[in-house]
Image 1: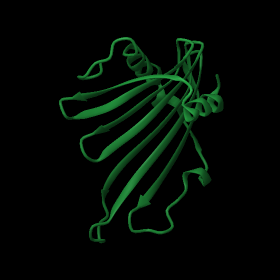
Image 2 (image 1 turned 90 degrees about the vertical axis):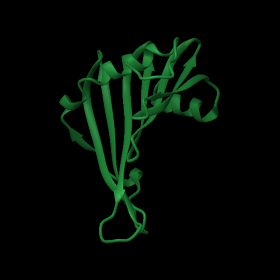
Image 3 (image 1 turned 135 degrees about the vertical axis):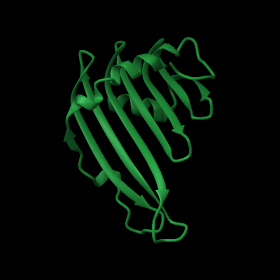
Image 4 (image 1 turned 120 degrees about the vertical axis):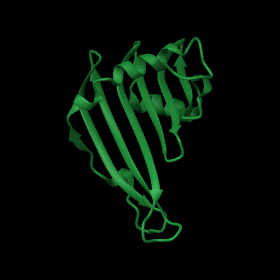
Length: 159
């Protein structure tokens, strides 16, 4: 099942799902959701936050038990200097395409959302920038860690 088809089935809620939450000493906590069809995982969603100022959602797309695409969106927020009670979200979106378990193309979008602005960027209208995949070399290892918890969830730290 390819990307659009997987998302369609997730949106329609016609896949088998299982999920669990974890908390690693209050430093990193999150939720893993596994979407499967006919007993095979086709997507893993990992939503997590680290401390109070960072949260992320990672989507791992799988076909025939092989990882082929990863979409990661991380948001680090801070107070906007010079504007009372205003915050800004520094957003990074990364798209990693894989073949034979190796990243072959990596794309990135970075933008800022300000709480006091009316003209914040729309992610859908921003262009991706091609980036060097060397920073994505451990993406498959991250997937393997998450995949192993499909059959045996944990409430503590992920290894």
